[in-house]
Amino acid sequence: MGTSVIILESDPKTAQSLAGGFRSHFHSVYLTCSRDEMRDKVAQNRPAAVVFDIESSRLTDVASLHSDFPALPIVCTHRVPDEEMWMAALQAGASDVCAASDVDNVLTSVLRSVTVARRATA
Image (tube, rainbow, N blue to C red; front, top):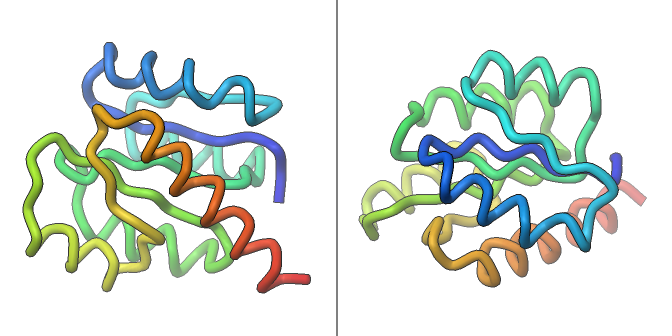
């Protein structure tokens, strides 16, 4: 696993806010604009984690990413809390689901998920 994180966030302002919060913790922070671009970046860079906007994507994308990269922590973000969506994302393979506006919580979740994944593969 690398020292980078990949962010797929539909709102550019939110994406920049998340990237700013991650830059002091990761060597590289990649912002992507589409699911296909994110998948390409994951395959090329083997990041430590992915931050994935669940509201602008499909749960099948989370499941597919988890299936193809089972050790990769996927932290999903949302704008509006929705318990059903949250549970479905976890069942699809997400490590956690956080409010996109809460940068500190997303960062904490990613760091925790990366630590758990590294211990599991050690």
